[in-house]
Length: 404
Ligand SMILES: *Cc1c(COP(=O)(O)O)cnc(C)c1O
Image 1 (cartoon, rainbow, N blue to C red):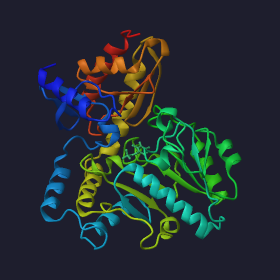
Image 2: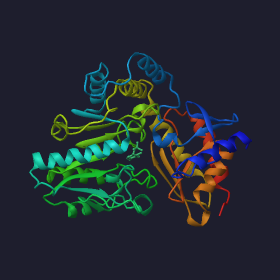
Image 3: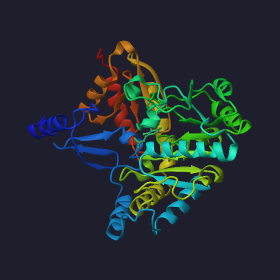
């Protein structure tokens, strides 16, 4: 590494809070599936900023929409109307089939907004006694980093020494419909769940789980809130992961790829009832729904559809998964995935996944470990067959080595 690279890393360490442990690469440019470091080395991005850059780095059409809008108008606040918000509403509603939209910025804000909305719905529509609303969540969930959200995390790292936390959440195992049936009470307003648990290591529930979940929620008048911030917008090979089981959530959360990585944009989507309970002054955000965000999100949604990225995710995801399954290596415990949301879980004896990610970096691939023994693979949805094959050769070379 050159001295300038070491300077970047050292300066970050000196001034920054150490709440991340980045791999030792300093990136300065990106295009499509590729990123380059300050020394000109090229890497295939197999993280896509945790699926936020699904449309590929610096997509020219999203860039053009952003620059054009930045010249005209960036922020009005919701104290006034702007000429982008209505179009964003219309287009996201048409794309997802939802009735109401609440625009926010980060994913965690969308989750917080959904929690507030379903509680309000519970009191004002379902008739739950004030202050008694319960929300059911799953063990090993990841819904963001705000206090409200980490309060119902089950990961000691995520919640440790950040309390006290808000009450009103009940934790059940993921993928267990009987546990949901047993946890619902007359005060349950919502079940908040990821279609596939991403941060937990790409955990896919058993087939039929969400069909049962949908039936239980409908039968008990419980709002099904699907956190599709990571799984949504084509990542799993369908627009929304719920489509793999042919169900529809009552509330859907989108973020990450909603802006193609240009700008934080998130949204709560719902039927009329849930978001319909919010009255003027009861919830808001200075930047939520700003014209720059709306213009960026509109372009990000448009290219996703126009350029066939969702179909490509299904096709290349299947190719990638097959290729990973064909790698014969004693280090591999399990390969799993849906669309381009993939993971290789290593045997605990094979050593830490981080070591494999560092070795992959040296071969021109950036991937991220999660939970010590899992390598998560989530390239931009614009990846080609040749690029998948190129990546597979490198994964095979690294996974057949022993870093224990
Ligand atoms: C990333 C993520 C979030 C949080 O989004 P931020 O933009 O980081 O606040 C919430 N839920 C899921 C499933 C995520 O993957």
